[in-house]
Length: 119
Image (tube, rainbow, N blue to C red):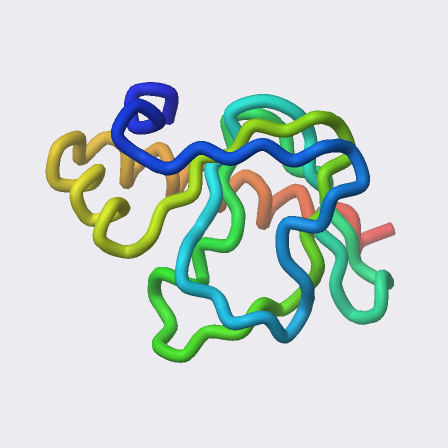
């Protein structure tokens, strides 16, 4: 993701800063370059911590008319790569391994969330 950051839009968010909220229209995903982000959904019943190297908000790239499902808030100072669909497709074309790494990251996060619900 760092290599893409030179070609993409990088934004910084201070601790407590809102990146997006539930119901907001979504047209991009985010790659977390530095920091930690908390995702909350279902009125804060569900939550997940996103760490540097992970992506979130990818549903916006695959769903037409996407609305954000939950809130994303910076826990620490964050540096984020903002990728719209066009930038994402360029990244996949230039480096197909990017798509595999993205899927692996999402798969790992889903497995971790499933393990949390078994408690």
